[in-house]
Length: 111
Length: 111
Image (cartoon, rainbow over all chains, first blue to last red; front, side, top):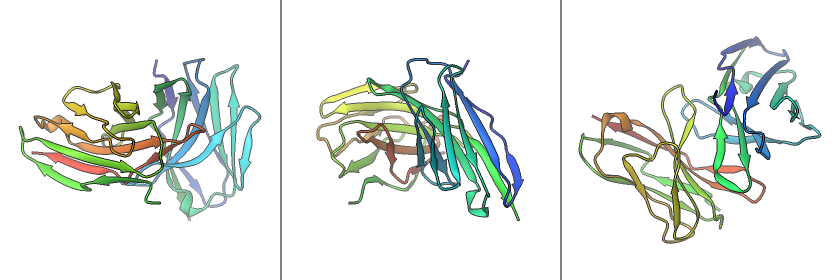
């Protein structure tokens, strides 16, 4: 089993729709989680950190479920500019080598 | 602040040639990473460093070497280029809260 698993998609949704991705992780020692956004042929950029209590940033909401070992990303009122690949990342503060990226979920927003 | 700077952005190598991918940062971060990303795939960790003078292997270190003589610089060396090393290479640093900051990537083709 991969340490961090994501549905690769692609998710193809109309503009204005709500879309959600899940990401599961196998290492229960993982302490920190993030969602990154990667545009085609560009470097990944931090979208948001994921906190145990859940957190929201505008149209984006991230949740962490430690009991079931998954994190989620919800995008509301999706825009054409949200089209990208979304990478979930799990890591440990105590071990630099334990930052593990999922393979990414491709999202395409259609007009 | 330039953040994380990678050079070159593009390079074509012949099989057996050697080259160094440069990475420099002005964020004063101790942790630095080299990843490779093959088309349509996630990021794989090649090498990482937790500070000047300290480096360690990641998931896919074969065919690569690194050094970390200063906090700022973390070059990645390919000694005998092989077609399997055709990829996009990303250098990253890690901030205090765990997030990664990436360079723009170096696209390498080995023919």
